[in-house]
Length: 118
DNA sequence: CATCTGACCTAGT
DNA sequence: AACTAGGCCAGAT
Image (tube, rainbow, N blue to C red):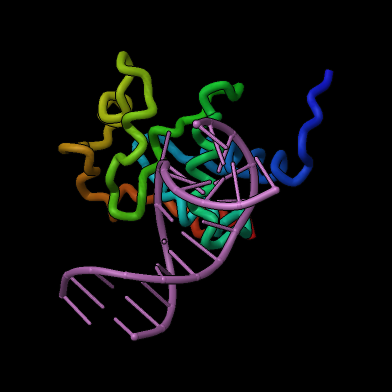
């Protein structure tokens, strides 16, 4: 039942989840790039909000691989205390130092460039 | 119903 | 170069 999902929002959310799940292990992406890749340039904020509901999404969405443009783990406060973003990223081979991803440019993953989604 | 905030980014001054 | 303002849109108060 239902749920009366709003088609547009649902679409947007679906795209965000899809892109986020496409991020390879050991790589990270940024909200703005994801937003832009789904055709919502400037809607980076929405992406963050959508990812906030990604915890309930199935399969699991690697939201920890999504950071802001500066490589800062801005969303770390929203993760479980038992599973902090830094820990998850480190376990995947990403070096994190104080809320920031080192070599961010190197581990950065562009949805449109790498996957050419259009 | 009005107002503000929010896992952000770009552009203008 | 630093700061301000605007944009995106939906949830929360």
